[in-house]
Amino acid sequence: MVTTHRLFADAWLDALSVETPSDAAASVIDAALARVDEALDQFRARVQEVERGGDSARVAPLLRAETAILPDAAATADDAVHTVMQRVAFKRRALLPLFPPLLERLRVAHGEAAVVCARTRWRLMARRALADPGGPSSPIHGHGTRYVKSDRFDARAVESLPPGDRVRADRALKRLGESPIPVELDFRPLELGGVAVAGLWSVKAGGSNRFILRQEQDRRGPFFIVEDVGPWRDEVAV
Picture 1 (cartoon, one colour):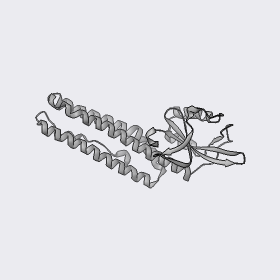
Picture 2 (tube, rainbow, N blue to C red):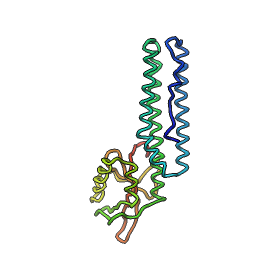
Picture 3 (cartoon, rainbow, N blue to C red):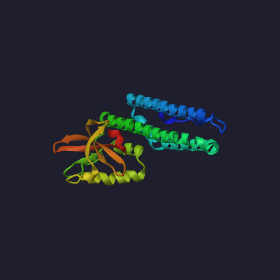
Picture 4 (cartoon, rainbow, N blue to C red):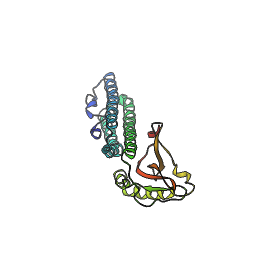
């Protein structure tokens, strides 16, 4: 499972002690750096398998990994390295310069893993919006831009956002019906990995969140069905 994969193990530094020669200590750190890179590659491969599987039930676990599990793992890894520094490097000051590159690599690797999760999560969300679209849950709202929530939306919002963010999202959505659409809503085609997803649009939903909208047509003209919402990272669009 993606949510149980670790990018660092305390045991990788067990060989370090105050008696470890400088060259040997450097080799231990270099090996740990290589293992972090290897673990990140394995993580990417496992997330790619999730994406190829196309199971929208993985959206929630990916979000948990991205927003909770990976940040917690990054903090735990950082604490573990600092513990070794206190045990070894603070008694052998010559070894201190070996540790900052490992601390930085751990920070970056966990951040990259979170972006990998976010990219796959949004691709699964987009696929779900197209493959399992909902119907209007109420009369259509808005003037210049007409919109309505999908009857799938509320369940998806509960999966992706805490209550406070859902309230902010509803407030942002009401502004979509203004004419013209406020520039700050950043209404635009949904792009993932530098490619526009045909038929889907995106708009800010308060904070770092965004909606997924699907365009439809009735006798009065085009309107948008709001299918989904979730935390957004700009790296997802790149």
